[in-house]
Image (cartoon, rainbow, N blue to C red; front, top):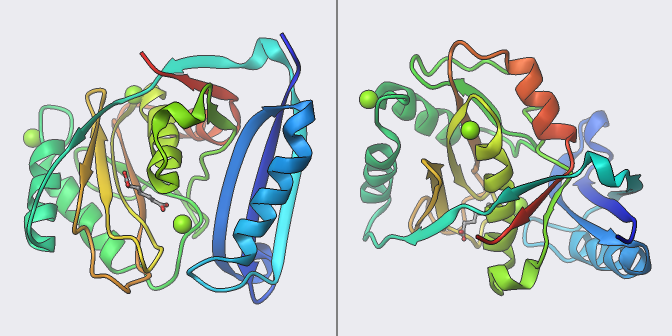
Length: 243
Ligand code: PML
Ligand code: MG
Ligand code: MG
Ligand code: MG
């Protein structure tokens, strides 16, 4: 098998993220050597033409992935839902997540944490699935990385959805993670999703059009060591395959 490379882009405005810059965009792929150049270029273009503003800091990292390190996982099944308001969507998101391993109270807390973010978080919040207590420390959030799909285009033409589906599939594959809630921080994108029990539930109207408040919450079982989950999510190379 040809050697694979992880190509990752992160972009900010007002300087690098680590110097207080405002997060604009992040994206990544896992590709063969001969695709590294063109993918790096398209990721840079994307950072320069983003609805959240123009980046003045772009970091592109490329590294070789040893083939034996790659884990192959199944893509979540997609279910589309229809709603007519934000409150209806949030209510449906809550009902879909609520069950024996995720408590309604935890979902309510997660929704209000997402709504009250005052700046874009590059990473996700890690929340106890029963109590709703936030477990990640600092403001950085958990940054899911090192994933792609085998055949990205088979997942559809909607880039937001394709990337979210790959990320959500990796997140649900982590032992101890039992659910996810997400809506975008892109002002022109109001579709979000919840993931649980092997399903990616797409939900329209997750926020007001024009709002740049969005992000992700991962629900984790109380008895799980969150550090090992974070290590898996941030650095284990994963390729998602369609079932
Ligand atoms: C993001 O832009 O970071 C989140 C995108 C959510 C995609 C939801 C969908 O269209 O399925
Ligand atoms: Mg319950
Ligand atoms: Mg899991
Ligand atoms: Mg975005």
